[in-house]
Length: 246
Image 1 (cartoon, one colour):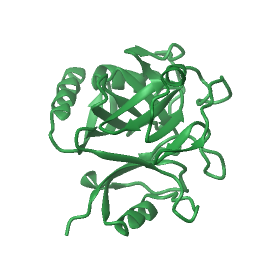
Image 2: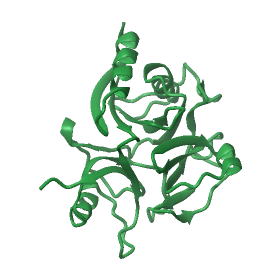
Image 3: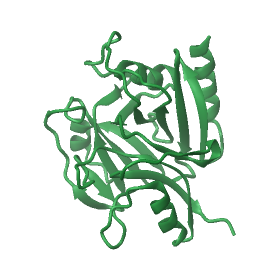
């Protein structure tokens, strides 16, 4: 019953005309906060450095900077793994400028658990693309962030995810529909396995491609739900912006 209710509710969310909406959902015994953007009318961007080269790092810092540009931040989430200096581990593009190249090879940690992928934002659409496919297609992303592992690849769960895994963390990620119009961000409300989290995207939210963004540092800004998670400084941040109301 829980699976069915969430799947139906996720379909309803996809039909909402607003640029973004956030909800708390339950699926298969776990709790999630989900924010969904409709790329037909959403202004979704990535942020890392301010004009003076300083890391934004925190949701309030970014929000204040956007206010100075006449913009409101209606949603934000950490958007990819980073080094101690907050520089991105993998590929990163902001406002059309490549800051970090694509990392195609396997490596240590979750990022290097291939296949990994890239979240690519373009005019009117956004896509989660597996890294080798991204390199082959060479999409002209206005914004892009590479992370890993992929959670769902063309409807299949990552091959290394085990149903009986004991590795449980708070996790966050992003998924996209096949047509690039529906973008779904999720953060778990309790510790979950990779298999749990990927299954939620594929089976609970009907998402064919999804990407893990991070674990222990996972945070979200969702004012409609009273969420403005605090903590140490982040690296890349994804945010949905809109013109400030008078």
